[in-house]
Structure formats: C-alpha cells, structure tokens
Length: 178
Image (cartoon, rainbow, N blue to C red; front, top):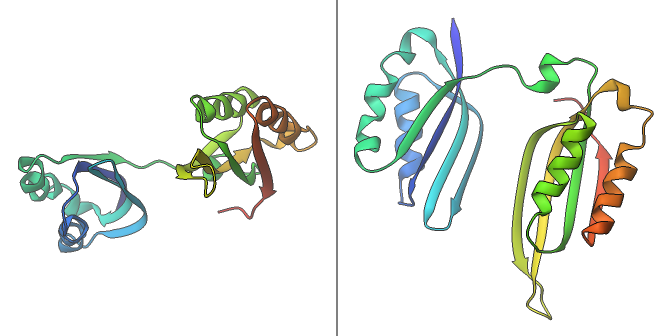
C-alpha cells in the first residue's frame, strides 16, 4: 500500500539541502511526484507531493530530525485528492496576470475567483524590474478549476473587469484536465 503526503520544508538556504531531503525520501523508497522549490529572501522553501510505501512512513520523522535540529521547519501532511480529481467535470483554466506591481493584486484576484466558486489549484507570482523605468512589474500564473455551472457564464469577463480596476493585463486559457 502506498501513502501520499505533502512535505514542506523551510529554512536557511544552503547548498545541498535538496540533496539531503530527497536522499532521506529515497532511503525510504519515497518518490517525489510533484514539487515546488524556491529561494524566498534568504530562506529556502520546499513543497513536495511524495508517495511512499505505507510501512516506510512511520520512521520518516526520525530521519528528518537532523534537519529540524539545524533550524529547518518540516511538516508532513496526508494528501487528499485535488479539487479537479474530487470534482469530475470541473473545467481547467490557466490565468496569466501582469502589470505594475502594487499591494493587493493576489488578494483581489483570489477574492474574485473565490466569490465565483472557482478553485485555485496552483499559483506562482513574482516581480521584475521594468527595463526602461526601473518600476517593479508583477507577474502571476494560476491554474484553476471552474465548476461546470459556470461553463456558460462569462466569469473570465468579470476577471477582466477586476484587472481593469487594478490596471493589469489578464489572459485566460482553457487547459487540459490534469
């Protein structure tokens, strides 16, 4: 029997941390199915969906104690189905947002999607510097699933209105189901 769980790790950015974490998982016959890793400020963050034989999971926390002793924060959480898997017939979309950076962009977009009953499956955002002006530019990419009841509703048009109020460009693309 295989157990699926989400492993998170945050702590100091050091060379070799990914090697150590994946080595611990591999030592217990674990497989990283999906992951996101990023340096955020001076901290390193790891988010992984891991599958592992159920009989190997019980000793995992002991194997991770050395990392915790070095100041890393590690959690493991039983994984459940994604919204798309749990709600067949929901429609997958990709949303791309860009424009001048300012406070509240992620909140306003997430708030609109939430009010529509749309689930965010993943989201990545960042800022860069505009080449000529040096102003901060915001980019965000989201994968969402939309309830079938909204298939004839212009929810993307409503998102365009939110973007217009925030002086952003938004593009919405249908994607294939995961």
